[in-house]
Length: 291
Image 1: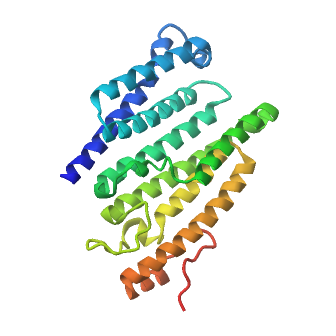
Image 2: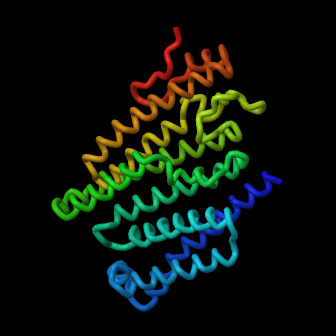
Image 3: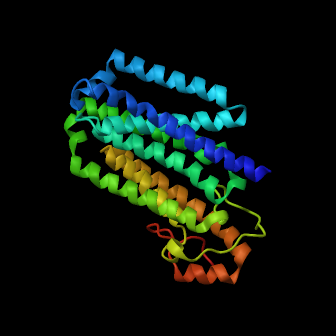
C-alpha cells in the first residue's frame, strides 16, 4: 500500500513538473505576433510579469483542487521547478546577455526535480519531500544565493566577464556530464541508492560494482561534484567557482569517509578488495584509510 502511494507521488510530480513547464506557452503565443528576439524584453516588462504571475496562480489553483495534503506538497514543489526550468528555456532561447543564466536555471531546476523522480523510480520506499534536495542544508542555500549575488554584481560592474560564451559552454558540458553520471549511478545502484548514508545494512542491500561503479567507487558524488562546479563556470563566476570547488571537495571527502566506514562494516573484505581496485573518482580523495 505504501509502495503504491509513493509511486503515485512520483506520477503526480511528473504531471506537476510538466504543468509548471507550460509557462513556455506564454512567449510562444507572444512570438506569433512578433519576433522571438523581443519576447524576452516583453517578459521582463510589466505585461510579461503579470502574464507569468497569472499563469502560475491559475496552475496553483488547479493543483489545490486536484491534490490534497502530502500530494499537494509534492505537486507544488515539482510545479515550481517546472516553472523555473521553463523560464530558463525562455531566457536561453532569446538573444540577451542573460542567456547563460537561463542555462543555469535549467540546470538547477532539472537537477533537483530529477533527484526526486529517479528516487521514485529506483527506491520509492525512501521517497520523501527531502528527495528534491531543496532543503539540503543551510550551507547549500547560502552557496546558491551567493552565486546569484556574484553574477548580478559582476554583470553590473564587469558585463564583459559574463559574455565569455566559450567558458559558459565548457561549464554547460561539465553540468551535462556531471548530471548524466550522477543519474547513471542512481539507476545502476537501484534500491541500494539512498540520499542518506545508511548505518544499518538492509536485507536487500548488495555491493554494486558494475556499470559506472566499475570506474568510480562513488560515481554519484563525482557527478554532483563536477555538476556543482560546472554551474558556476556557466555563470562565469570566478569567486564562486573557487568557493564551490573547495566547499564541495571538503564535503565529499567527509561524506565518503563516513560512508565507507559503513560499507566496510556491511561488506567487510568484499568492499576492501573493491576499494583497492577502483578509485573514488574525486581528485585527491582516497576514502577511509585501512590499516
